[in-house]
Structure formats: structure tokens, C-alpha cells
Image (cartoon, rainbow, N blue to C red; front, side, top):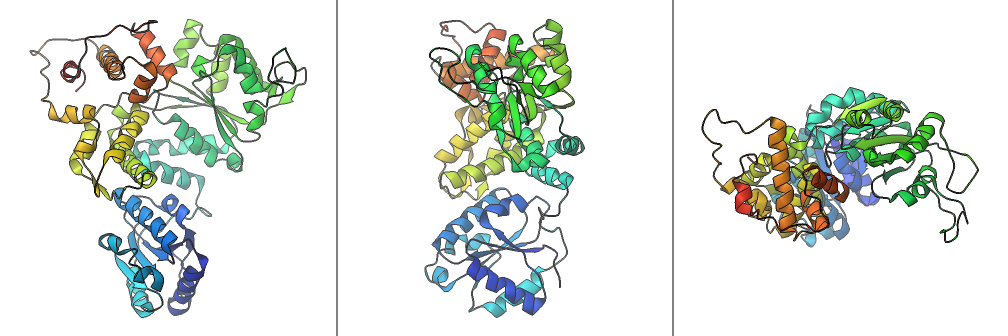
Length: 479
């Protein structure tokens, strides 16, 4: 019996697909695995070139198949796509619009012989579909990375170590670089994957409620209290708790967290009963914690405890090879969410997105793609669907940087000048609303406040800066 995972049957209804599977087994001695529609995209990589057979038994199946065909085509994944239709689906012509994207269509059981002949030709040597039941942790991590962030595949070995051992992990990088994605990947590939993964934003809670949110509180600990509250450390159980933006953690709370990491012990607010934390802790920071330690803003002992394993995520502008895969995955996801029939991205639009520096990193890119998909029409995402700031960048002439030998500052100064200019432009576009400006930039409000303070822009009433889109487009550091 041949079982090379080169031929997969994807279905929602078990009745028709089981008859197809039985036929392949009896006529060709081929064991073709059956997968759910929801699991298909998790088994595909840019290297998988097998044959994927969709089984359409009713209109619900037809909708799921259309979504999958679009997502696979937008992401330019290599599997050959074929459909087997029941008589009802064929008579209602539910898959006719997908014919240009399918290698074959067969009505079951009317065209069973044609399908058998096709299957004989389809079973050629090549890269098989992934098998989650047998693949190693390294293979699973690599598969997850190569689909969207191929530049990070060099981290596979380190991520395997992080997933295999219950130690604290510190993820460093600018806001929106994918730290939460990496933390989730570590959790999903660890022994704790059957338990919860939760995020606790250290900068989102005022100091007076921070402890009760993280550690919980007992009933009646003070007048006007909300009663018993289960903190995140208890709620996550034996899962993984991501401490996001740990650089914002107040000094008076750092000692408590150090104790949790060292001993696992903590007390809910207003309680004398010691609890035991069973969760695995991962922390993220947008700042260099080593510098914060030297400034006395972060405890040295806590810093050492956090970075047992450390990952530095470069900004998206330093990972241009990731933009294309990220864009395709986002267009596929938002196309399905918003019911758009997008099957491709025009090369000019993709080049424009790859050329943009993305100061807000992946979060900003996601915001731009979501807007573009919402405003799109037709089967292809085009340049005019993109945000004006992207379109402006590719239509404006390249600015002149001055005569040879002129010097405008260090790379750090150039980068900071560009970042400051982008914040000013976002504030102007948002009518000086910091919340909307943060959304435009693809960063959190906490991160925006930090940047504004850094560049001297944080005041109770923001002034109206005479900084226009035209000025920004000719800024020497935005190209």
C-alpha cells in the first residue's frame, strides 16, 4: 500500500470523501489521508507540491473550497488543486467560477473512471504534505516560519530549545516585529500546548490595579473592592503567560515578579495565603533592557532571570524578504474575512509594499493590507487600493540628498529623524488624536507616548505642526 502524503482529500462532510478514499485504496492501493477544510492551510508550505483534492457535497462545502482556493492562489503555494463534486453541486454550478484555478473537476460517481486515470498520473515523486502527527518540533517550527517569516528560519534551533525547556524567555524588538507570534509559536510547540496561552500587557494597567490583575485579589480586602478576582497567573493554569512590554513594569512590582520566577510563589492582593504559579513565563520588551539596567530603571537580577533564552527580532525594514510572504498571508486572511474574491496581488503593488520602510513594522503592514482589501474590487489587489502614503512613495521622484560629501548625521540620527517625521505626519492625519495616530502607525498607545516623549512631542495639548504630506515625501530620510 502506497502512502506518501502526496495526495490529500479535504472535506467537510465525511460521507462522500470516505467513498473516494475507499475507491483509491481498492483501485490503486493508495492510502489518501482525509483532512478537514480548517486544517488544510496548516499543512502547506512553499515546498509542498502534491495534489490537494477538495470534496464538495453541498453549498457549505463549496464556500469553504472557494476560500481555500483563493488563499492558496494568493499565497502562490504550489499544490495542484482538484475538485470532486456531488451531482447536486455540479448541477447548481457552484464551483464554475473556480475552474481557471483548478487542475481538474470530476463529478462523483459519474466520472469515477476519469478521476482514477487522473490520480494515476498525479502520484509523482515530490515534496509530501506535512504530517502533524509525526513531524518533529524543528519541522513544525520551520513550517510555521517559512510560510510568513522566512528570514527567521535561522532561529529554528534556538526556538526548539526554548520550546523543549521550561525556562523564561525574553523577546526583544521594536513594537510590531512579531514578538507575540514568536511567543505563541514557542507555546504551540511545547508540552504546554494543550493548555492556555494568555497575554498580559504590563503597560496597560494603572499601578493601583496592576497587582490585582496579575496576582488576583481576595474578597473584601478593602472597602469598595470588586470582590474576589482571579489573576492572570492563576487563570492561565499550566499554560504560557506572555508578559508584554515588561520594560513598563514599575520598580516596586519587579521584586514581586522576581520572586514568582525564582520560587513560583505569590500572594493575591489582600491575602496571606501563598499561591503557586504553574505557568511558563515569556516576556517581551521594545527597549534595550540592558540599558535600562544601567540607568537603574530595571532590576539587574530580574533582567538576568528573564533572559535565560533571548531572541532579538529585527525590524521589518531589515527583513525585506518577509514582506511578500506576510502580505500574501494577510491578503488571504482578510479576503476570506471580508468576503472578497481576491486571487492574486499585482506585482507593482507588491513592489511598492516591499519598498516601504514600515516604521510600525508588521502591525502597520497588517493595518495597511486590511484597508486595501476592504477597498478592493475584482480578483486582484492593485496599487490604487493601497494607502496613499504607500502610493505617494512610489509616485514621488526620489529626493535629492545634496552634493557629494554633505553629511546629515549618523545612521541612528537619520533613523530617529525619519521616525519623528512619521509620528508628526500621523498626528496631523489623525487630527492630533494620539489613539488614532497610534493605529495609523501600527503601534500601541504606550509605545507612541514613549516615542513622543523621546522626541519632545509629548505635551498636554499638542501644537499644530506645519508638516504636510508633501514635506514628508521630500524628507531625505524617508526613502
